Length: 328
Image (cartoon, rainbow, N blue to C red):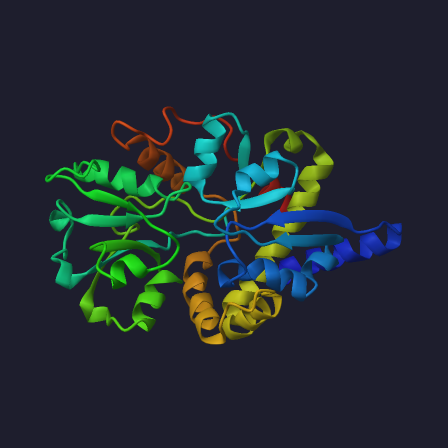
């Protein structure tokens, strides 16, 4: 932390001395304003971006916002996306590159009602499972392939319900299990009246099919420009400083998120709880991508049975150039 503060201070002094104006950076979030993205809001609120000479605009996402489409259309300099969808987009021709990985661990789970008869993976066949799409279905499909369970709705397989971003299918018993995140939808189920002992939870991390989630991605051609790499290094350095502050001050970080929620949809209780869970996913990393985590993600995606997420190992899909410049 002291090193980052010193680096940020030096950058600010250099900026003042040169008389240069702040550099504009636009960040596109993967979802709506919430504690899942606290580090970025903290970095902006606490002046960490300003200290680096950056003027950062944070654009909330939502169900109709695809980060890959936004950046391909020039609507952002850097986007937050899950690696499965980023690699799928890359194979289809959009050259996204991971420049940093603030989320070290996966928060994705499948949450099941015990009264549905599902308390182990052996119970999946014959049941309906709620799955998010839009890129989030890939780890699930890989998992089912690993288990040898078809996703065609047959008696020996599972029926896949294209789940909206709510927990209604579980509450209304339309599905035996639904997709949830440790920091969000699981707690919506609890707040709706079900108790932890009423549920069986399968964490993708525990099942060996976890894939990397919220990473920072840019377009490959931009990385040919040393000035852009330096700008992204400043952005990543300030962002990770924001994440560390958020980990150490979770309640205050949650309040900063609330202050930035223009919709007024978020609540203090939910955001504080979410921040506490998100901190477990970002802890212990400075944002530098671990190649072993990348390799595990790729291997999971390549083993999705007859419909793999990607058909070959990607080349050039990540770089340490930015984090090396940020923390040298």
